[in-house]
Amino acid sequence: MASAPPDAPGPGGSAGEGGDLLLDIDGLSVQFQSEGRVFRAVEGVSLQVAKGQALGIVGESGSGKSVTARAVMGVLPRTAIVQGSMVLAGTQLVGLPERRYRALRGTAVSMIYQDPMRSLNPTMRIGRQLLEAINAHSEKPDRARARARARELLELVRMPAVEERLRAYPHELSGGMRQRVMIAIALASNPALLIADEPTTALDVTVQAQILDLLDALRRELHMALVLVTHDLAVAAERTDEIAVMYAGRIVERAPTATLFSSMRMPYTRALIDSSPGADSEPHTPLRAIPGRPPIRGAEGDSCAFLPRCFHAATLEAEQREHCAAAVPPLSADGSHEVRCLFPLDQTVGTTGSNHA
Ligand SMILES: Nc1ncnc2c1ncn2[C@@H]1O[C@H](COP(=O)(O)OP(=O)(O)OP(=O)(O)O)[C@@H](O)[C@H]1O
Ligand SMILES: [Mg+2]
Image (cartoon, rainbow, N blue to C red; front, side, top):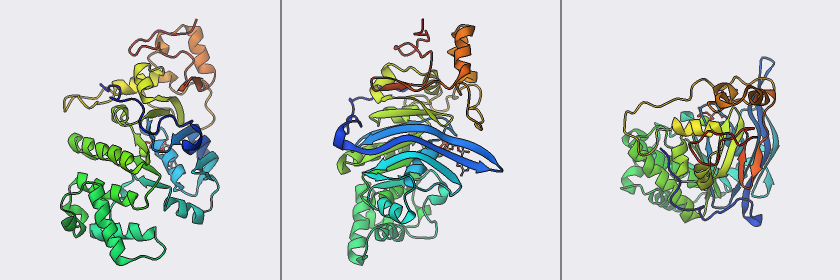
């Protein structure tokens, strides 16, 4: 099972503190239209990331994590309808022309993509791929300087035998080393914010931990903010200051990481933890999946999206369940802890009593 992170919020501290705010997402919605139908992939998401802070975005497959990340990067397909506000380092991203976006991607934000189409080119040496990334961010590429920078980037990601790796093709590298190269490419632009979308899903557990530790170390060394997107709550537990849990396109719980683990309130988050493999679980242990499936989202929902799968709702009175079914619960805040549930769990993790009279 996941445990609370060993130390209190990292150098970034709270995102709300004045001049430290780097990314401010307010009421972000992303819809896709096909064959006259509207699909709400992301609905009313608000998030803040401070300089140097690590934010985890966690949720099951299809919950809208990558769509949120890609919205910030400005790489959604043209068919996507993006509404709301996203301000990155003082620039409004919604409606930003592609030319200006390209400049921002060269300085402010970079992403490690989940999409294998955007991973390394199998026919090109690692060195060439790094040089392309480096030159993409400079006005007048200088060959000698770019080569030195390529070496420096591989050293930064703790790549062994740098010279040899620069001449290698991707298939000559292990999965972990390929991911180090992907991180080096993402760092070529010196981003203030790095978004890592499932950066370790394809790797085995030991390598996974090494890559996550590397991202954590780089964040501190480079004073960079990190958005870590993962379906695994245990992964986010140890390397973030704050966690936002997404379900069916919405944030359903959000809190400083330590608070989330000491006083989890949303039944969905609890179910997610129970289905997480965890860092200390035995290999080959079968996962306990959350029963049922996330809803198909079309028109505006009129109940709590988690209700059909909610173990906690089963313990409530029929009249209380009617409230859950009557409307999408609002995201209500208790200090820095937000929860989208009318009958949240008691403060102590593991109990399922209702706080409502
Ligand atoms: N280009 C698109 N057109 C239509 N629907 C899309 C598009 N991209 C994503 N979606 C839908 O939006 C929803 C959210 O997708 P998203 O990729 O954000 O999920 P996710 O949380 O990243 O899941 P996973 O853990 O599987 O990566 C999904 O139901 C997906 O099918
Ligand atoms: Mg995804």
